[in-house]
Length: 315
Image (cartoon, rainbow, N blue to C red; front, side):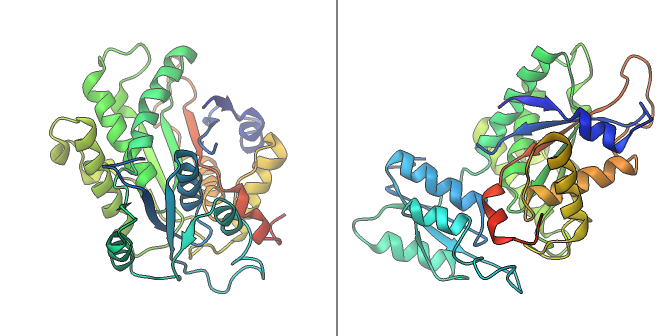
């Protein structure tokens, strides 16, 4: 997917200074395993991931079963449990278990049915492992290096896949790049779930290592360490699905300056983190020289606008 500069948002944040980072955006919002006929996955009721799996299954001619888990209380509107991604997954003919069903029990029940070979699809990080190579190719074409990448992090697959992909890229690419060494890149996952401290980081590390092993990273278990996983928990609004003023302000800023819409559950919270970290100087390097100039910060937009309708007060 293309990369575009967010020059008006950059100017909004740094109107009279060239010392702040230049902000960019990359849109990522637009498996048939071992003979499986059904894909099974879990996520929040309004999960973008579950909606995307439902669409993928429909495209591949596979059944999809969803196991929703939700901790949104109180619900933001009367349509929360019927509209948005829930409406879309229904149109895509995905079936659903009751909220908070045990995934292992559901999966075993589905597998016990003779007509169903259900796959829990353990390959969630692979798509974003490929992202690393796509981004590197785009950087080469643009003559640009993205020092910092910011992305929403809920289940951990997106960030875990990125970490694995960039590790493989590091192992297979010459370190004599024309602009900067690959290992100076910083990946920041902005927590959107407000889990207990350390829980999400541990899950991202597990996914990153599992993905790394699948894609051929040498010494995956030792090549990827806790130091590779950066989770920022300051911008999660204190609970999954809970909207705070900071998130809405950031969403409105991006929408009004760049015409780009985010959502209040995932990408809006990551955007709030991006904006506040930029304002505080946390995304800028300690040493700026004339050769490197302003740092380039990439915001990865992973979708989610379909849930806006169930948050009518976000405007």
